[in-house]
Length: 138
Image (cartoon, rainbow, N blue to C red; front, side, top):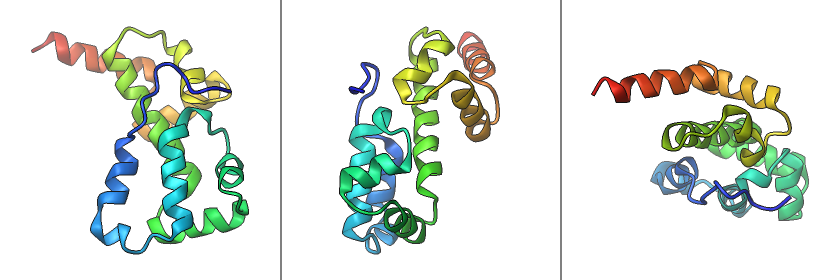
């Protein structure tokens, strides 16, 4: 699957993690490379195996190192970034919610909704209504 048209590399979560001096000092080359791959290929990542295959390392090694060095599970980090990108897309342009999940690399709409609700605390539709309501109230 090719990179999606709405995705722009430079995920703020990746930059923030790599620019934090306390975290950056303890990142191994495997984790730095994983973060770089996540940053440039986010919509094409469907599992942690995609990351480990791109790095030519075992999934267990990359996942364990990522978790130990960043304090976050790699797959949760990826999904959190995808949800952050979805939030940007929902507020930037009028996308249909059901059109977003493939552009973000989610395999199906229900997986997207579950991840969005888990990390954003509300459904994508409710998030959009809340944001649009705030913009109209300005």
